[in-house]
Length: 169
Figure (spheres, one colour):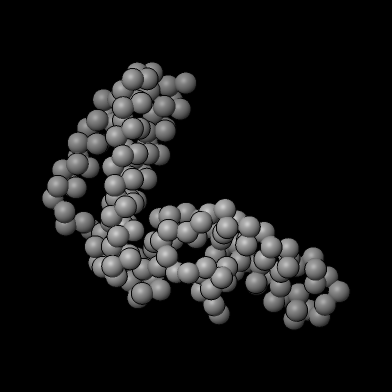
C-alpha cells in the first residue's frame, strides 16, 4: 500500500500546496469512485470501496498541518498515536498555566480581550508551526514530536476560546 504522499504524487513535506492537494484529490476521487465499478465483480467493487476509503483518509490527514506532521513522523518511525509522553519544557508548561488562568477570567462579551487572546494564540501557533517545519526538514524528529504536542495544546486552547465566545453570544 502506498503512503499518502505517494497516493497524491506529492513530495513528503510538511509544507504542501493545499489547492494542488485538493485538485489531485478530486481527480482521484472521480477515478476511484465505487459507482464507476457498479458492473464490476464483487472483488473489484470491494477494492474500489477500500481505495476510496484510503483516499479519503489520506486527504483528511494531509490537509491538516498537525495530522500531516504526525503522519510524516509516523513514516519516520515515531508513533505518537499511543504514547503517553508529556512535555518536559518548563517554559511551555508555565505558558500553559498562564493560558488556563487567562481563559478562566476571560468573558466572551469582552471583545477586545477576546481579539487579543485570538491574536496572541495565532502568533504563538504560527511560531510553533514554523519551528515544526524546520525540525521536520532537518530530520529532528524528537523536537518535531514535542512541537506537535505543543500544537495540540494550542489547538485545544483555540477550541476552548471559541467555546467561551460562543457561550457569550
